[in-house]
Image (cartoon, rainbow, N blue to C red; front, top):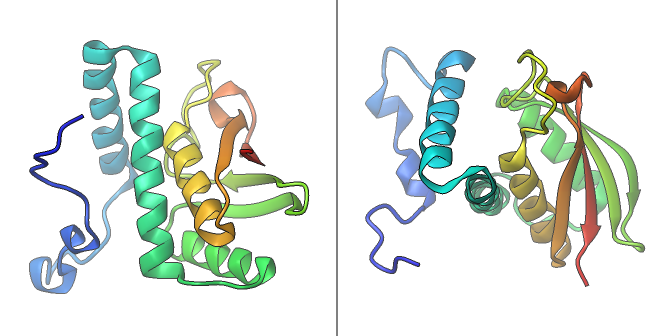
Length: 173
């Protein structure tokens, strides 16, 4: 693992959008995001294989989820308030529409859906779950909220014929 990072992630790397893009602002089209995402995935899979690429995307999502919680959500005491805040931010930022289907924190289990998500909504069916970045992102959000480590797995995906992405989350003992 590299210790001399050129671009170790910090929230400051997002920059000052108002100063840097006074005319274009903070939005772009979804195709541009997907162009970057799938080109990264293509290069990484060719270099490291699909399994390692999924691990990299999961870890990147995890890093993003931690930063997202710290910088945009902040400490939340109540699950309902956490979910409400998260739903609002995900929708406002155009990331997706979150719904909690099942939540039993005593048992350490949640089932969540994200509709109209950035990664795969509208893509052709491939038979593969695609949202490994989202798995890591959700795992980090849940861990940040609860203080417990979660394993998150996508169980339904637009690319497998479902019209929403469904994630199963379980506390890791």
